Length: 277
Image 1 (cartoon, rainbow, N blue to C red):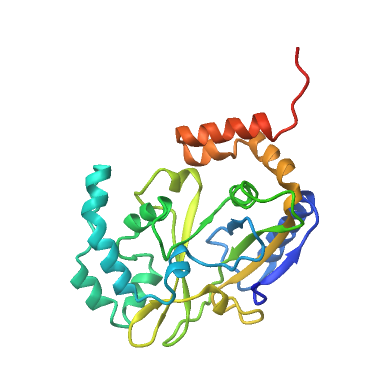
Image 2: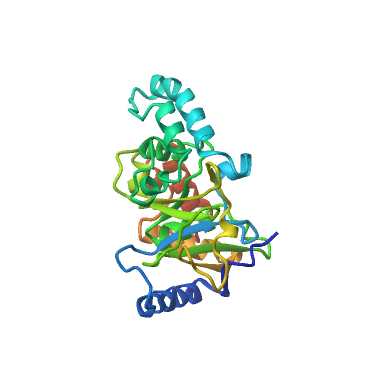
């Protein structure tokens, strides 16, 4: 089912998207409560019917923070053995105790989420994560929206735009969005993709992960403003070709041999070829 609470804007072409993006930037600059100290964040999804959701919520809804932390603490020796990289994270008993109190909110507000760098690394390698990944680049988000989209269908892709506000509201039994910034020592993909992340949590007797569609309620905007722009998937080839001209492609965003092959295959088999002798 489609999320109707986020402000949705439907455009018919890639060119219209860029115009709408410019309008949103101006609108955000004129908004009295907009937080200009943080850039806009963008997230692309290949199906406009998909909810704004983390990979963890798709596996287990409303998981306690302490339970998730216990899981990633337990698998850490295996991750370190494979990668040869050490992840010095706080011990589980300390985090379990801290996350059972409302004061844990101070850590999340200030961007001191325990094991943030380790969690970002896990997210970039496909482990279920409570981190919702965004990019500071609208073009990077567009790549992720269109790369695997079914252009032969009548469907649409979506690009979400998140704008922070200065006077955010938090409180007991309320879902809160916490923004975790770009300055973290983690996997190189984090920097190639200009990544930032958000966490959505609420506190009743303990901290647990909550769903985004319960937060971005149209007209309230207590955590920030989120727009959803949808574009026809049929625009895929045109968009990917333009992005490739700006060096936004699989290889530039992932930097692996597999991503190089993906980029070359897209150029050779998807983009129109000029006649050559």
